[in-house]
Image (tube, rainbow, N blue to C red; front, side):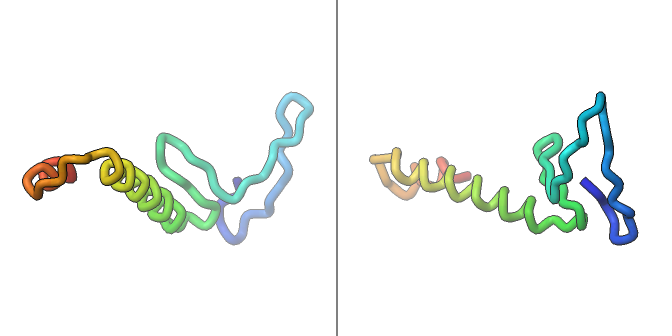
Length: 73
C-alpha cells in the first residue's frame, strides 16, 4: 500500500518476488486505506452490525418488548 499523495509508488521486492500493491488492508481489525479515510471502516462496521441484528431478529421467536430490549442492549 502506498500512503500519501506525493508517494512515488515504488515497486518493492522481497525474496525476489514483487509485492502486490493494494488500496486498502485490514490490520488488527481496522480497515486502513491508502488515502487514510475512515469510510471503508465505517461501511465494514455497519455491514457487520446489520448482519448481526438480522441474525438476532431471525432467531428469536419469543418477541416480547422486554426480551428484545435486553437482547439488543
